[in-house]
Length: 176
Image (cartoon, rainbow, N blue to C red; front, side, top):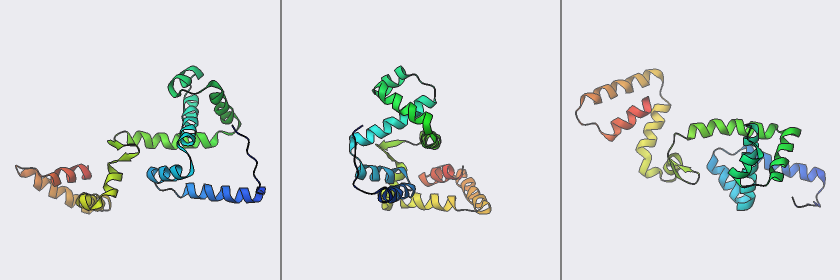
């Protein structure tokens, strides 16, 4: 890693690092995080950080250096550096890995449209086209138990008809 000499005082550095941490903590979703990383880091820097996190995940999972080198195309010295950080104070790695693993497992069910883009982000980018579906999702999500029972009754009535509309299928999927 390159040496870096700051001309700022430790107090000034701590203040701007705190501001960076605050900015990161205020991120609402992965798309916002991607925007921030694109603005802050070069592609290579982003890749390097992402690989470090993945190395930590593999090490915590019990993978060998050889397996990690083969999977991520990194050197053993990079793996050793991450392993050393894990030994010294790996709480940040461990928390990030635990939290992202849950979300990754949840998102594996969603169909991916492009890099970092799922149907949810498409709907947000083109709300006029998807507004009926978004409205329906919002209504169901914010419905009380009694209101959901009424929606289920409507679905039951719609099931009696021979022709099932797209709205019927979406509503049935949302309620279950």
